[in-house]
Length: 388
Image (cartoon, rainbow, N blue to C red; front, side, top):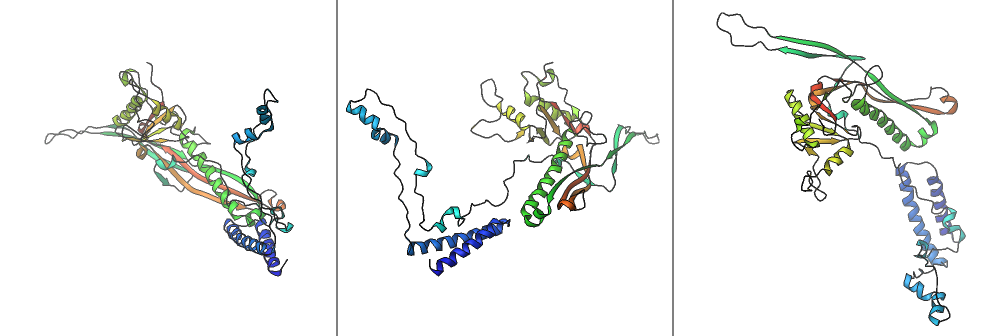
């Protein structure tokens, strides 16, 4: 082996050692590019100075050619057999092309000149899109609770008054309500070596921790039971106005679209402005299935994709909405998200036996509250046609 080839081989070994360690995705791609260039250079040297045994591609026989060439078939044609049976061999991927075998044993793939390629980054599991919290207005607060004043009654006594006559009185009743700030948090432990050697993994872990907190918050905004340990969600009894439609309210031959229209009108009758319909994706698909008496789809059909709109309102289909439920909402006036502190990520070595085990604890945390000031601005319930 000449000196130039030895130099290239040494450089390849050095790159291989670097790639076997934990490096960043950008550094790994850079090393892979250098490795590819050296491998091509080494191949050029091999072709010049060594005899490469590169077999030609094997011819792949069709099923008909395999039948004709089979010995049992030939015996049948010759009359020496009354029947024939044989197995058809499918062409394998390895038969489609030849494997290059180098005479120099130091250049075989198993020796690590061409290590297994690792795709940069991490392939995450699929996650549920988060979209509910952004629907409602938010406000910062500085304490662990919040108050808001809700109007409970208004008598309008305004009227035409004759000159010199006493003016009539009106009356307005208020109620002060108090809400609580809740803490949503979780922890995870990782080794300090990973923290130092794999920044990409730590960044990914931080993102997962953030998502975990926000996912719990979204679920509580929808279905939280309230009290000391949970936010109170919009589908919790008392926080919304039940649609309570009867069969007579929906007219003749009622369908699910009529039910949603009735809910929309109920919000409008309370002087609010509905601007969103909340559905589970499975229920939205059920509505796409609905056909009229002629067999035509109400919402377009399989050729033309139906817009996510009903009665002029956009439809938000989210897995956070319970299946079989729906809600028509005036998101601007129904509720408020109160932010005590935004999402915080912290890392600690001083936790339990972390110092002994060389571990680091990661904590993700949010503090927030949620108040539903106007239940009349949320009308919904079970997505089913009433029978009575």
